[in-house]
Amino acid sequence: MSYIWDDFNIKPFPAETIVYRNGEYCADLSTLPNGAIDKNYDLPVHIIYVGEIAGKHRLNIDINVPNQKVCLSVNIKNKKPAFFNIFIKNTGKNSDFYGHILLDNYDNLTYDCTAHHLSANTGIFLENKLIANKNSISKLSGVAIIDKNCSDCNSDINFNAVAARDAKIEFLPAQRISSVPTNADHSASIYSPKQVQIEYLRAAGLGTLEIDQVIREAFINDFSLF
Image (cartoon, rainbow, N blue to C red; front, side, top):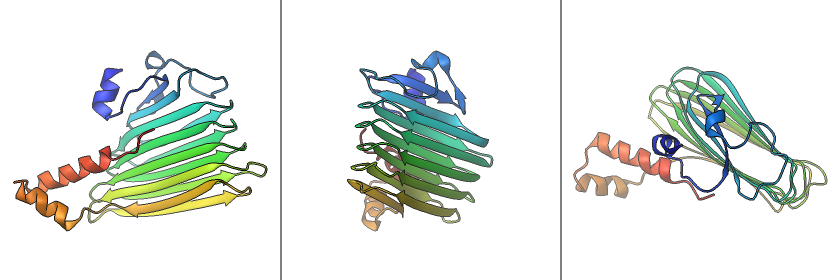
């Protein structure tokens, strides 16, 4: 498992694991079978999805038990056209889901995430980051669904991107809320370094390409903790 942490910049912590690489489930790296989370575990469940993808890929995550913490770490790139869908269903009262998704797009990427609350007191928090490289096209959408009789839910889906000047990006956020939530946020933004930051890096002796790399690394590493 060490190469997962080293190669894909995913922080380890004690957890039951479900691992995918290049879109394929890796039984030898997982402590749990892929599929529904239908029993409680003493440790959090950590779903890891890394590597390079092309074509259509779908990740279904079903949380069917109360009081279970589930975390998702995604670090993928595409150099060919790709469609990636994440569908989360949370029916577990007092169960929280935290997702960190990093998308490194070199071509044409369509990404869609659905956060479906099916019980009261459920939480789904998705932090999506996009690196939009030169000449790339990115279409990112996300919908939070809170069903009837599902009060006191917490929902937060945010998108943040750093982009080459000629990259094209489209954000499509949406919410379908049928119960009063504790919190329901949705946001999208383009990251841009401040001029004072660039001047500081130049004063430290960095060239333009080195500054771009530092900004990229800072953007990648600035995830909130699970």
